[in-house]
Length: 174
Image (tube, rainbow, N blue to C red):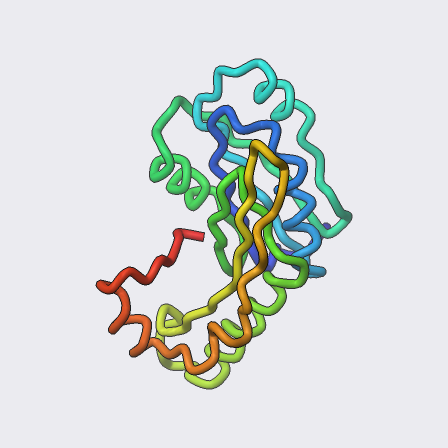
């Protein structure tokens, strides 16, 4: 891949190597654009994770995978290490045990680009891009029902998010 990645996906990993292949594959399916995945080995000690980290490979031709090794610094430290080396136009935080919905990064980038185009003099931080999620039960290997993203996001504005923030609205880092 010769062009600058559109997105840098930062994936902290502490002894969660058994999730990495599925995570990388989901990122590859989430966008057709050049992107990089920065796997931050946050001081993993488990042999299976160390083996998985040594076997990291891109899941698609449009994906670059880079491994950053560091002493354990916790999630904030791992995310900051990823930010230090990220080359993408945008950044997405994704935990090692999470997966993205196919096409989701393309949609989020489209929303951010539209926000930038409609307000070129405003900082991009005013844009909000939302997505859906599914839960996964490790013990059974079953996924929960996907939320009805279209209905949930209908009418969702920054003002609504700010109003509901203190009333139990859950917005994970990624």
